[in-house]
Amino acid sequence: MPEVSAGGEGAVLVGWLVEQSVPFAALDAIATIETDKAIVDLPADSAGIILKTLVSAGATVAVGDPIAVLGEPGESDADIAELLAGLRPATELLDTSAPDVPVVAAASPTSADGVSATESPRRIFSSPLARRMAKEADLDLAEIAATGPGGRVVRRDVLGAIASGPVATPQPPNAVSMTRLAAPSSSGAADAAEYDDVPHTRMRRAIARRLTQSVQEAPAFSIRSGARVDALIRLRSELNAAGRIKVSLNDLVVAAVGRTHRVVPEMNVIWMPDAVRSFERVDVSVAVATEHGLLTPVLRGVESMTISALAAANADLVERARAGRIRQEELEGGSITVTNLGPFGTEDFTAIINPPQSAILAVGAAAQAAVVVEGRLEVRTVMNVTLTVDHRPIDGAVAARWMAAFLAMVEAPAQILA
Image (tube, rainbow, N blue to C red; front, side, top):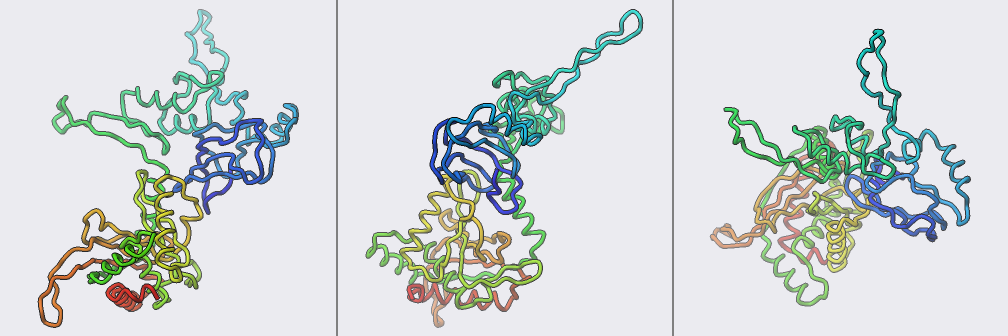
């Protein structure tokens, strides 16, 4: 199992894309892997065949653990057995022919001569994922009906045991079932309200971990303002009327963020343990809501991209993020994130910084509002924006200069095209 994401301890093997004994070429995808935030294909280093898979689909595997034996056509079973013997104990629990968990049967009644007898120890066959799930659910493998190959306890068996249990039990991050339970009322009434426990996914756990880290470690502050975006909306209409690539209001906001970082380069930084790291290129993350959770793919070199190129690249990232086909490297990097809840009708909100980035811009809906223009009350389209900043690498005055430059950019949007 490769280290797909930096610092990752493991990943889920979603499935094999190549069957055993079927030839593949170098760089062909042979398996699909799920990390905390992405589903990625595992390419082959060189041409060959899969002689033996060591891990089944759905298993969680630690980084560095073997998942398959690759080789050349015609290699014998003896060659495979010799290789596996050299890999033990790493592969011992992955070999379906090897016993897994020793289980000692309960003692028999004491005999007439006062000597108690016990049955011989027996072993329970189970997959690594099933063992972990059973441990987390506090279940005895010996009491779970096995339906896997060779009488092996597999994931579905543990899920079935959890679902049939009389009380709620912890479930693994990758479980997809829900447990419906009756919540006891304060009066102990039998008609207590029901509720659903939806097990945490790997992505939800990753989001929770990173945002908790952000709140705990980054001393953040926020500044907010209202941008008058009538000219920006007109620019978008003109661009869409003239071009083949449809440009969204969010595309223009992201472009403005990239160009504002070029005007105020002190914002294009992140906090490191021993230094403030400053970047030449402006990479901007764009928050994307998916059915599994929030992803933040990164647009590279935003400050120098044309609007049409940015719109096309952003649309591609959003589509693949929602389809679960984003690559891990596309989620890493950047110094600022743009998150937009305007399409949902939210006018104003504050977002949490996505570590290790140093800032996040929360964008609300563009709506008509009464504003004072040269002493007169007029109706303009206003978009509320809130910039949240990590105070460690960025001072308040820098953030304020950035906000002023950003407002100037979107209120006179011809600059975005420069």
